[in-house]
Structures are given as structure tokens and as C-alpha cells.
Length: 159
Image 1: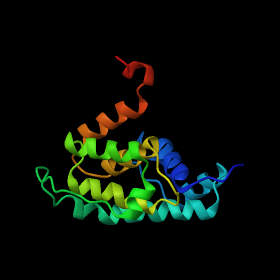
Image 2: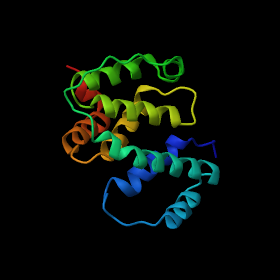
Image 3: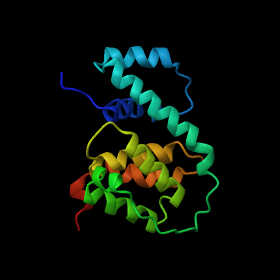
């Protein structure tokens, strides 16, 4: 089996456990067993849970920012190296369209930097954005917008 990444584990969790029933109580031990049975390494599973724990810890801070604030953000060199150009442009687009707030953008960047990967492409970024928004209260409309974008047939997007 190929080496799986933290993002692969996160996507598996999101698609198989969190997305369908976000209020379901699933204990961490059974999730870890299921992930291990699915072929993920314990190292990647632990990293994924740490990523989710850090996202949850950041949640209360993200509720404080006003959606109308549009501060200019200069990315650090490490952030520029980690995000592909298309992904960076898409993140800027999401903020300009007010799909994400500046604080949510910071959460997305924080979670991108916490991934154990050298380069985050547009598809990976979309999933990170969806997971961040999904974790935020009152973001149902933004989550639905991202879901449509991720799950829409690319042929349907052409005009």
C-alpha cells in the first residue's frame, strides 16, 4: 500500500464519519481501529487526530472576528512555498467573495501548514477549507457552497 498522508486520513474520517452525521458520538478508540483496519499507519492516524484537536482548540478564537474586516495579509515564505499558485488564488477568491472570513482564512492557513506535506494543491486546499468551515458554527451556507464546488462534476462548471 502506498504511504498515506495526514490529509488522506482526514478525508477518510470526514467522508466516512463526520460528514453524514456530524452530531454522532464516535469514540476515538473505535475510530483509530477503523482507520487502522482501513490500512492507515498509526503514525498518520495520530497526526490526523492531533490536526483535528488543534482545529477544535482554535474554534473559539475564530468566532471573534467580524466578517466585514478585510485586512491585507502578506504570506510568510513558508506559506508561499507550501501552497500552489492556484490554491493561493482560490483562497484569496474565497475571502473576497466572503465565503471565508479573514479569521477563517488564518485557520485554513494554519491547518495547511500543519499538514505533513510539501505542497498543497487546489483540490487539497478545497478539502481543508471545507473541514475548517464544517467545524465553525453558523457556516452552513459556506459549507454548502464548498460542497457544491468540490462534488460538482467539472464538466458542469464549463460554460
